[in-house]
Amino acid sequence: MNNATRLQYLEAMGIDVRFTVHQAQTGVVAAVDVDEVPSIKQTVALVEASAKAWDVLEKQVSGCKNCELCHSRTQTVFGAGNNNADWMFVGEVPGQSEDLAGQPFVGQAGKLLTEMIQAIGLTRESVYIANILKCRPPNDRAPKVEEIHACSHYLQQQIALVKPKIILAVGRVAAQTLLKTNEPLSKLRGVSHQLTDIPLVVIYHPAYLLRFLPEKRQAWQDLQLANTIYQKIKTL
Image (cartoon, rainbow, N blue to C red; front, side, top):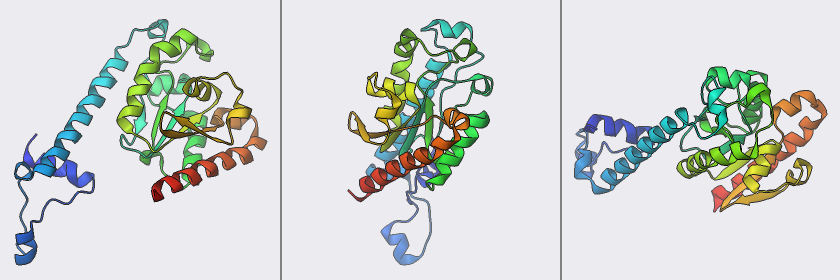
């Protein structure tokens, strides 16, 4: 990677490397040689390693044949959003729209999720969105245990790469899978959980909310809970 490209990476991360002390004093503006600044070199190396890890993982998912779903899918649904997001939303399984688009949460449920994200002052582009499964089950049936198991390491790697400050489990299947429990969603929502050392909040799936509009009030309460937890984390 050349020096100009590295500078673009760093600037995208909000790191200003274009001024040395001497330049600030003299007013002469020139690009810093990234290779001459050890701390910047280290940051660039980490950025490059992360980008490579994402590329490798996405290729693994696109060619995955770990379960029978590889025979019925149109394409895999890897994930989308900010790879360094503080917020990570984990849904259940891709539906028909997702299978065709190759993106998580599209269609009417996706539009509602976008509105939910915006309701807490975020944008869809600022969060990371993934699913428990990367392939659509035939006829949108519930995922099998062996399918979830075969796909779980992909999600674990995504979480490790994103390093979110908070995770929202979207729907019953996502919540039960992440928390390794059979408790109903009604008992899992409304409280803060922990996934290793990451706070996790369970919310209703937007597809469910489209069918049961009165539950939107509780869904808003869950989003407020998540935002309260996140704001506390930011102050630590």
